[in-house]
Length: 110
Length: 112
Image 1 (cartoon, helix red, strand yellow):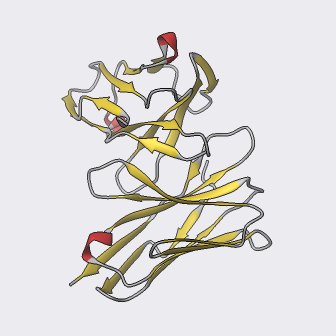
Image 2 (tube, chains in turn blue, orange):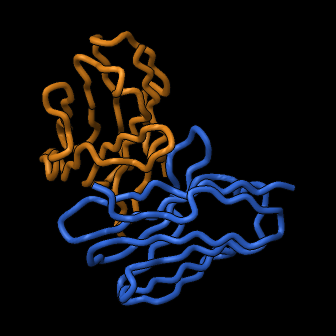
């Protein structure tokens, strides 16, 4: 069953620009996580934000969480060509495994 | 620290044949998952193990898929007989202490 839905499905930007991806979900969560997947590779964990947190930073990544709107956003600042990948949000609910969305495909051109 | 190991990386089979995938999680990780990722979609949970016990297999097509985790360490996922719609990447993951998942590189299955 789908929990998180990312928006947009695809995003193309130039190097140096910021990239923003959004995730909406349907039910209460313990935490929300973002993952990156390079083409043909496994997923890599980027950041975890707990339900009682509103914002979290990690390097060039900034994640926000609005539990009242059941939504999260991932901001990548000063994008690089190496950021080209698919990005997935995943929701962690009590008693279930992580449920992933369909992802946003980010293309950063130099 | 070694990551999650999976094999084979690629497998091509005819429909109705069988295939098996192997996963060795990060040492000490009690929770292991198998996800199926169809091209263009997000990973979908097939089965979750806690040590050698099954926690959730509600989305595993049990008429053709089976999985085991003997001794609570490595795991095997089997498909028999395979269908065309089983073409996908099979991802194994183990869970770290703060709730994040560590994924292997995946096993890409093509069913002809």
